[in-house]
Image (cartoon, rainbow, N blue to C red; front, side):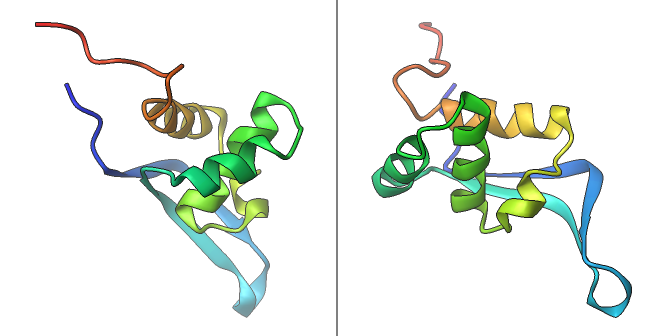
Length: 96
């Protein structure tokens, strides 16, 4: 199976930023294949694997980094798994 170029993950638990009239709710995570520059920026942060994942999801999805930091573990893991499919270390298609 080939990795789709784009994927939208409906969030199990919407992420809310702000309050009152300025509150913004994110209920889905739009993802796509990362560019080489985005991969470079994410990996050059020098942080942990989680920090790299947060930065890459932020860059690819367009969501504020503070929103990505509030993703549930399952949504974060699903997004990381999708993005890892584009790297040499990520999942590969099985031979048929």
